Image (cartoon, rainbow, N blue to C red; front, side, top):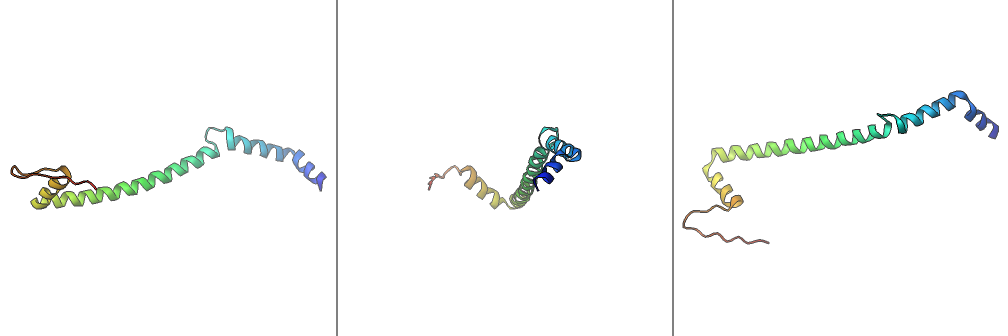
Length: 95
């Protein structure tokens, strides 16, 4: 059994395969580790892309609502930017 393993390890094709495999795994410019990291980054970027597309869709709906309804515009200005009319006082309560 031990002699078979030694014979396999001493085989020139096995040695060539092992050297090429180690070279591709660690030393090549486009090695396997870098390819794995790139694939992971691409996956993360695709998730970000879908998130931002959803946000753009929500914002465009809100923008259409604001453009078509002046009451919605006033509500947004009062709630988000704390705007007020001249004869009003605003009290901000933080939780």
